[in-house]
Length: 92
Image (cartoon, rainbow, N blue to C red):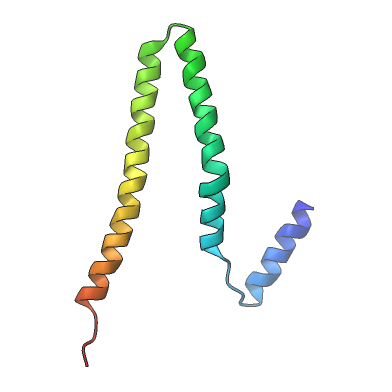
């Protein structure tokens, strides 16, 4: 099945069809990301039960900083596209 799926994607790419990147991102954000965050939370809880609270705090801080960087990148793209539209808009 995986081989057929990859073959179909390759055939569409060669035919000039566009890949729905917004749909892929939406799927990842709605389905995959919550599962990964839940697994990460379970790992943190399991570690804290073993008495490794300092490691849990360090890992949690790193995860929060990573999420902040991702959110900052999204904001930068949104603000950047708005600035480009304002600066390079052609006024007739």
